[in-house]
Image 1 (cartoon, rainbow, N blue to C red):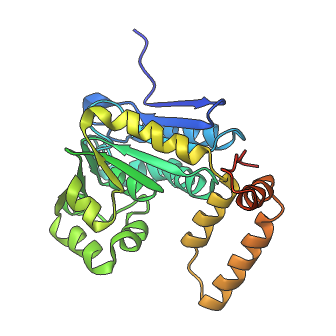
Image 2: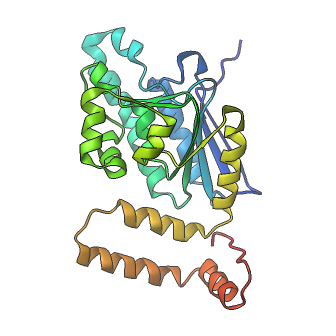
Length: 263
């Protein structure tokens, strides 16, 4: 029997939309070392493709990602640190590649996003969630510190006080609360998740991709205001050399809708 890969990845060169989906539905897409490495391969595959202008991140089955595969830690507790190291050796470069890609990342979330799954949601640029989605830090349950960027992304999304509250109390947020906290952008019915994620991705993929990359880079940088102003200047000047800038200005002056190519 041929076993399905733990992570699925595909690119539609006509739309510029890439899709990465965790594919361990029987364990709610919990991440073990093999899955982490497959995720890195998938991220490298889609971010290396110059036609990609939006990336949709999702999970197969009933959940987005239920976190790390704790059962893998329990198999040999003295070697848990080795398992964590191996897992993060793959996850870290994948997260960095997604953040540095000009293509915005849309997270399509159904069911639970816990632990590392929540961190991956927080690292996305736009989040669509189903009404039954649940969001949980979860690391307090196993007596561990958050990983996969959780302590970096969460306070930037919700503020330090709320972030620490979620970490200390282990609060589970439903979709509505996650939207109120600033984690979720849109809530949809479960049956409409894939359709809405495709619609959002199509809208983003038709936009000025290189400018979106500048949006991401500028917002991720922590620097004094004076340096940030100069970084904005450099990014704006760089954008004037793109075909999308020329098209955008021409369309604005001509009072028509721009047709961006991502170049």
